[in-house]
Length: 477
Image (cartoon, rainbow, N blue to C red; front, side):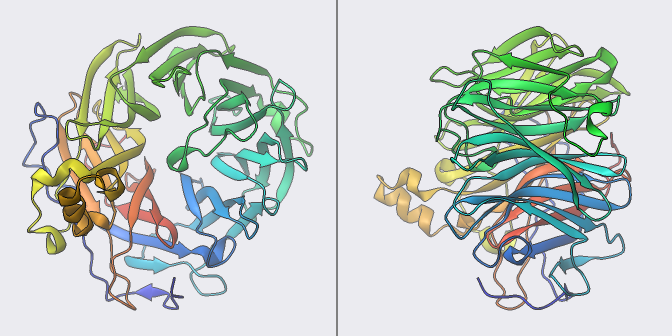
């Protein structure tokens, strides 16, 4: 990858389509009067942040802090063929527009960077959370024998310095474990979800870079008084294993119900999406499975007029063409399906795809990774859209069409639906690199609403990662 020296690109061409497009679900009429919010700013960085040009840093989670900054976390490649974990704090830069390059030792830089890992071993961060002046980092770390353990660290919010860190082993000897998600609770504690008792070598990845092949889903809770000391807690307040489920991908608190909702998948060959409701004491209230949803990647409580009216589950599923489409399933408060719909094959950059035939959707994959609820009972979801030509390489005609399709350049894809799953708008977006005019590959890994209503999309780029900041919508959480 060519080194990019410019700090703030003014002459940038946005390759975005803010138009409404057709979802693959035939029962999804579109509100043609509503348009996607405009992109204000791209904040992007290269591997220089986290290991060098060949590190290929991959951020998978983001959050807004209380002091006008963002915390991004993920993993990067190390020189020994393993992975290292990283956490980066970035100032909000609310007055900036266009494309902002964050480069070490330049005017626009990171506030701080926290990294950990051992050469050739698998380490990484899957999520982070803030409590007052501390950031809690959740992920996985390998010991000296190469066995992977759940990893939890407490950092100073102001400078990223580590206060304490701990590796929490699986309950069974020589097995592996990892945290996939962390969230602060309404009582200033933390609740975490992940996988435990996995066979050594079976934790191939997390989020958009893989799934555990073996193991048991678990949830762990720590109280505030256990966390806010100079030393790591010796044990959790409580831990719950969820047999029959392979990993608890995410967990969200439902304050009004004094409960937590967990998204997971079953251990059977089909790895069916599952949702588990847990009370505040760590007892299971109910478990339900959803075979038609496809792979589940995230879940969020759904809010309507300030009250929880159910849950919104996101992921992707094999569509009629054989490629993947984004999948959203809305559940009632007791876990019953209210609706389940698929979305995909959007209209993208008009400048490069005006001659593209929509019938060629067999090799267009719409992979969705994150969701945030809106105040009208709907949601916004974070996806990437583009081709996987290897899926059709046995058909020479389709393979030739696929490899010549400009949608081989992946795009971030944001999809907004209402309370009934009706598509309100979708948005594909990217930008041109000033040095060669190339549009980089982008995909949205995570999405959330900032406190002022702006939409924040976490991007994976072919040379690093970044944020896409969009104007507020009229309806926000």
